[in-house]
Length: 215
Image (cartoon, rainbow, N blue to C red):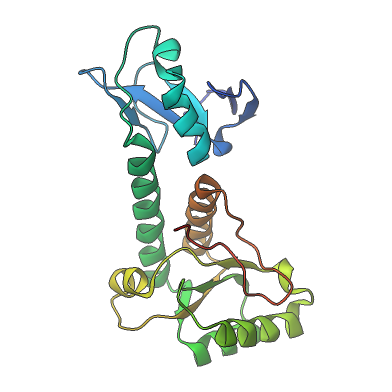
């Protein structure tokens, strides 16, 4: 988010497209002239903004866009794009954990099924390795209440091990995200991670696609 009184739009250093800051990532120069990401867009100093997509960040590194942006030679390492992915993933998993603690995440097939019938729901969350049969069954429950299944976001970004670790329980496969403050915060982080990986957080016709991790 932009700091107080700062512009809500910035220009991508690679594409030169003017975009809302929510669709960009800010990078700053460390004292050793290494380029580092500023996930919260709050670090002091000159910032260089890049469209929040891994492919665009890789292009920025290749084109030496950071040296032009900072107006001096800087070190943008090849691993910056992967490190950025890791930080975005960590932030999303942290927000996932907070949503559970706040009561905005319900886990377990039967509980998810029940919540879909009566709660204020933001999204379905499935682990990457979830069976397509289970995913379709929950999509059908959602469709019976909300109509077209693509009206409900489907988040499928994490493994069962990742979700189980951050939620403090074993064998997590399915969850549903509720429309509380913590739930909305996790949804925002998941959307940002999916955007960076250039995959949609939405369902296809049978509810099985969603946002899936890339190999």
